[in-house]
Image (cartoon, rainbow, N blue to C red; front, side, top):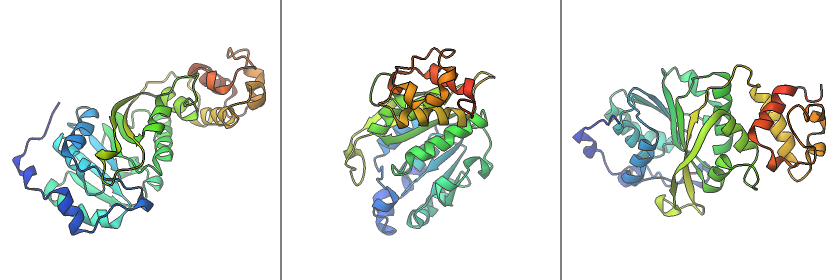
Amino acid sequence: MSTVSDPDWDDLPPLRDVIAAHDLRADKKFGQNFLLDRNVTDKIARCAGDLAGHSVFEIGPGPGGLTRSLLREGASHVSAIEFDPRAVAALQGLVDFAAGRLTVIEGDALALDLLSLGQPAPRRIVANLPYNIATPLLVGWLRQIRTQPGCYAGMTLMFQKEVAERIVAKPGGKAYGRLAVLVQWLCAAEIVYPLPPQAFTPPPKVSSAVVRFVPKVLPADAPAFEAVEQVTAAAFGQRRKMLRSSLKAYAPYFEACGLDPEQRAETVALDSFIALARAAGCSPGG
C-alpha cells in the first residue's frame, strides 16, 4: 500500500478545534455524525485498498477527518461533496494544505453525477454516508456501474449496520431483498469494519458498518438495470405473497428460469432474478 508520509500532517489543527472555530456542531437535518478518531478514519481509508493514483470521491466530509486519511493514504485527488455550508468553510484550510489534491464541492450529492466532475480513472468512492440518503445514493452508483462499466474501481461506504446486513444478505432471510439483489448482481460486497455508536460524535442510536464493493465484469447478455429494478420491486413489494401473485405478469417466464410459482421472493436466488429480468426485459408478460 502506498502511503503519503509527510510530517507536516501533524501541523493541521485538531478536528475538534476546526469544529469549534466554525460552529460545526452536528445537525440532525444533515444526518451528521462525525468521525474524529484518526485510527478509525485511517482504517476506513485502508479498507478501500491502495489509493495511489486514484481519484476518490467522498460524500459528506464534515470537518474532514476521513478526508485527511484519504489524502494521507495517497489518493491522487479527493473530490469532497458537502451540503452543509458550515463544513465547506471549515474544509478550506485543508484545501489549502492539500495543495491541489482536494476539491470541495458544495452541493447535493443526490443531484450530482460524480462522473461529470471530470476526474480521471481509476476512481473510488469512499465515504461515511449521511444515513438519510445512503440507500438512494448507492442505487444511483449501482446504476452507473451497470451502464458505464469501469466507471468506479470500487466503493467503500459506511451504512447503518441494518442496511449493511441487507446489502450482503443471502436468500432465505428477512434481510434479503431488492437491495441485496441489485448489489450482489453488480458487485462483490462484504462488511469489512463494524463500528459501535461510540465511534462517532455525537453517537448515533444505531451501530454502523463499512461495506466494500468491488464491481463485477458482467456477461454480454446481462439485463438492463431497469429490468432488474422492475422485477425486484414487484417481487419484494409483496414479499409475503407467492410469486404466482407478486410476479403474475412474469409468469410466462417462470419455467424457463427455473422458478416455482409457489416460492416467495425471499427464497429466490440471485441468478433466478437476473434470468427473469433478462427473459422479460422491461416489458413483463409481453
